[in-house]
Image 1 (cartoon, rainbow, N blue to C red):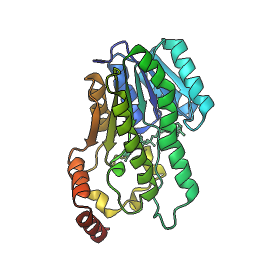
Image 2 (cartoon, protein in one colour):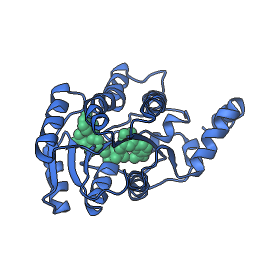
Image 3 (cartoon, rainbow, N blue to C red):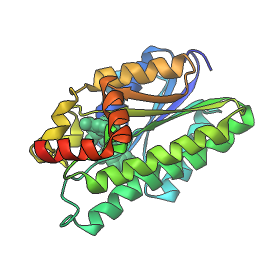
Length: 258
Ligand SMILES: NC(=O)c1ccc[n+]([C@@H]2O[C@H](COP(=O)([O-])OP(=O)(O)OC[C@H]3O[C@@H](n4cnc5c(N)ncnc54)[C@H](OP(=O)(O)O)[C@@H]3O)[C@@H](O)[C@H]2O)c1
């Protein structure tokens, strides 16, 4: 798929942060856009700022099968097809593994992993039938590198990375693409549940990014039909490779930094 003119993009987590800016850029590129998140009020505010008749907001909790069935049904009724799914709904809670609440972990898995699975499995059959489409997974640098205090969040994003890599293999030759985006830290609504003071000092080794940058890179990948993995900023990839190649050294360095 090249370009977004007259395409239909469904974006979860569209009421804030990355999803919100991705939605803006999709509209600017000529797509019809479905905004999905839990807060109806926030979605309506985003829809108002987009000022387009080709924007539909559908309150959706990605942990609820019935909400996702409604999202699919309403999208197809209104626009007839779906070309892009951006799985951006997600959140993090920052606590050491030794004392973090199991219920927080379960909630993160339900949104960050199962939520993505639910949405992807719901939209994929339509993309496969039309032999075109693009699924974007918003993972994290925390899905490639483990740091102090992010054990449960990292586990949810490592799971998403592994699943996305497998999906890319499965989709080979089908006409449907999958892109995995792994951003570093960006100041968004994310920090409401993940206060920046709790991040490990070693997270500062990678420069922060912005929602604007993440959205621009995501849009470029969709418009150019690029699949694969993208780390933002790029230097994050160097750290991820170094941690894989030299795990003992990486652990010592990060333990010293904290
Ligand atoms: N910001 C960062 O530093 C950073 C870095 C790397 C990766 N990420 C990842 O990027 C993605 C987007 O994060 P962000 O920074 O844009 O955070 P954000 O500003 O807090 O936005 C999160 C979005 O997800 C929605 N959401 C949360 N739970 C949901 C649920 N159960 N069902 C449907 N929607 C839900 C929120 O809306 P409602 O609350 O209205 O549902 C909101 O629209 C997440 O997957 C996050 O893990 C973030």
